[in-house]
Image 1 (cartoon, rainbow, N blue to C red):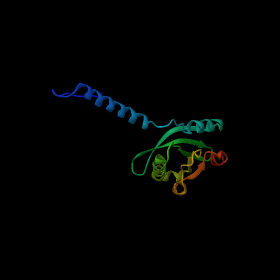
Image 2: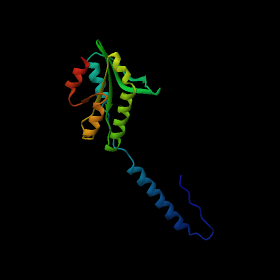
Image 3: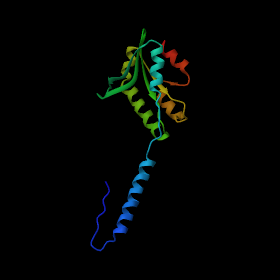
Length: 159
């Protein structure tokens, strides 16, 4: 709510004009801050995994080495081990690096699971060119990086 206060000698018309300008500025700020609509790939990945008839858990939590709870997007149980998948899907370049950092930290924190036949996949939504070579190199240190456009590679890790 915007309010304007008048002193005895203030002009009512000027006060209303200033209040109107403030309302317009707030409205402009609101429209400029709107995030474009974005559809992450998690629903597509869910459909893909369901078609493979895998036992899949969504948003599975594990305790990291620091004691912090870490969440992965998908936990797919296979006959010869378990595949953990974190999706990297974001609408903007400015949030891409934050997502990479979060996934890298998660894989690093739960790396002890690799001793128990766990496989880590960083699944990148490559429909937009947001992921630079440094991002991929970093994620490759702690996981297998797979591009969503190449589902055959993902299939190989799920067999």
